[in-house]
Image 1 (cartoon, rainbow, N blue to C red):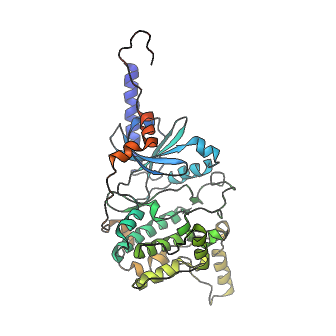
Image 2: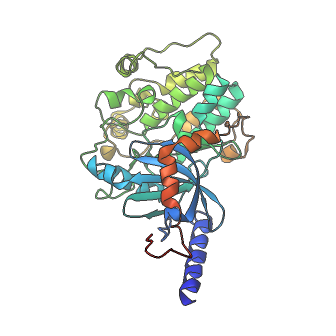
Image 3: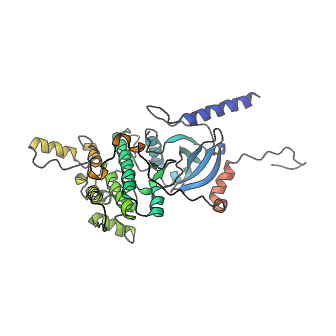
Amino acid sequence: MASVAMGQQQQQQQQQAISSAGHGEKMYHAPRLQISIGDFDLIQRLGDGSFSTVVLGRYKGDGCCYAVKIVNKSLVLRNKMADYIRNERNVLDRLHHPGIAQLQFTFQDSESLYMGLEHCPNGELYEQLQSRGPLPLSDAVQYAAEIVDILAYLRSMEVMHRDLKPENLLLDAQGRLKLIDFGSAKALFLPPTVRLSGNHRATSFVGTAEYVSPEVLNNAGISYSVDLWALGCIVYQMLTGRPPFKGASEYLTFQLITSGSLSFPEGFPPAARDLVEGLLQLEPTQRLAFGSLSMGLEPAARDLVEGLLQLEPTQRLGHRSIAEVQRHPFFAGVNWAAVRAAAAPQFVPPQPRDPDDTALDWEFQSLVRNAAPPVQYEYLPPGATV
């Protein structure tokens, strides 16, 4: 009886840790729980990465659903990607913003690492663009404002996401955007011994072809402007239904990006065009939110500006504000103090998953079997073994 009572007490503590995660804490730290994947009812697969699978899991202790990211330890170690997994955990452990899918808890077993993330039930922004095509201007403005609000917070936390794209922007229950996937993020707030090691330099290629900035392709030093470049690509895509740089192959896409080959279709809103052109400057220091301040300045001021606009972030005198983007005419009428209080754009609900697809997903069914409790036999015939 004592062991049963101890088990119930442990379950209550785990439920409390999960249900209280991320609410009202000034310095957020996701709890590391002593639970197992068997404590969840696995409902369906949500997505896949190179070394991970994300599933929808309902925690048996409180009935709440989470996006459980399952990271295969063997694959991570074999491909020497442990730094990226550790980086994502360290970054998410410090971020607490309504526009970022919250890391609620972590746990592990001998084979896998598990991250319990806030579940966003209405799918990706990418799926909305596929379903709806070009968005109305008012919807594009609201989504773009939510992204800018997220980027302003990340900059205040000294974080570069480096893989901003519609697939990494999810819609929550109210249809508001939440950013995910911080495995490639560069966090300047982390001590040098905790950041991505020297083998993963800031100039290394990360990101997705259609949204990667030219300075990354040119192996140049990067800054917060890599995310501004991606923002410009997303605004263009929301208003036209396609990315601004899309070649027949990844190589041809890179050629379009580095050459700055950008064209606008007829009817593209003038304010939006001006914003996109400002964000998609080939020279990072000419992008909106950096600004050219040296013209007509005295030598001392010019020297200050040159110090502020160093390409190497560690040599920069300070961090620039994203306020220039917020003041752009494209965002006229946006209340930046209450961006996420504005009415969310209408969206197309995701299609219910076909039960047959889930039943035929052998990898997911294998996870379900591994999570199931062992079969208990009340009676075994003589000579039978389990």
